[in-house]
Amino acid sequence: MEKILERYERDCYAEKALTYSEPEFQGNWYQEYAKLKAKIEALHKSQRHLMGEQLDSLSLKEQQQLEHQLDTSLKRIRSRKHQVMLDSITELQRKVKQLQEQNKGLEEELMENQKLKAVAQQAQWEQQNPPAFLVAGSHPTLCIGTYRGEGAAQAHVRNCSSLLPPWMHRHPNG
Image 1 (cartoon, rainbow, N blue to C red):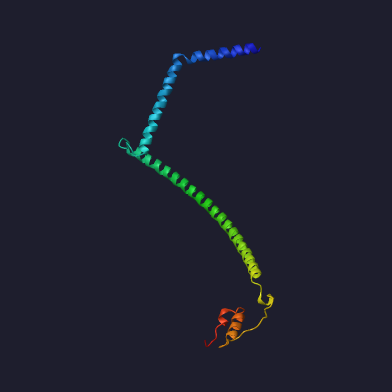
Image 2: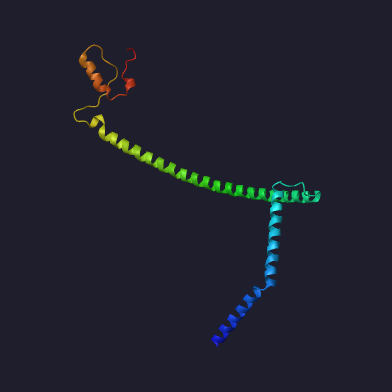
C-alpha cells in the first residue's frame, strides 16, 4: 500500500513539473514580472513625490492628495514623537526618584559613619588626655588672677593655667 502511495505522489509531482514548464505558465511568470516591475516603478515615483521631486507632472488634485498624505504622515510622526518623549520623561522621573532614594540612604550611612567616627575620636582623646584630677600627684586648684613679681608665683600660675581656658589666663589690667 505504501509503495502505491509513493508512486502516486511521484507521478503527481512529475505532472505538476511538466505543467509549470509549459509556455502558458512561462507567460504567467512574464506577466507577474511585468506587474511587479510596474509596481516598483510606481513606488519609486511616489517616493520621489514625497521627497518633493518631480512635482511638475502632478495635477492640482494629485498635489492636494499628496499634501493631505504628508499632513497625515506628519501627524503620525508627531504623535509617535510625543509618545516617545512622554515615555522617556516617565523613565527619567523613575530614575530620579530611585537616585534620590539611593542618595538619602547614602546620606544616612554617612551621618552614621560620622557619628561613629566622632565617638571614636572622643574616646581616643579621652584616653590620651585623662582629666587632671586623675593624674598622680596633681591637685585640683583654682587659680584666679595672676601674681606679679616672683618667678615661683608665675610658675604656679602657669601650672594652674593648664586647667583653665585661654581667655581666663589674662589679667584684666595686663
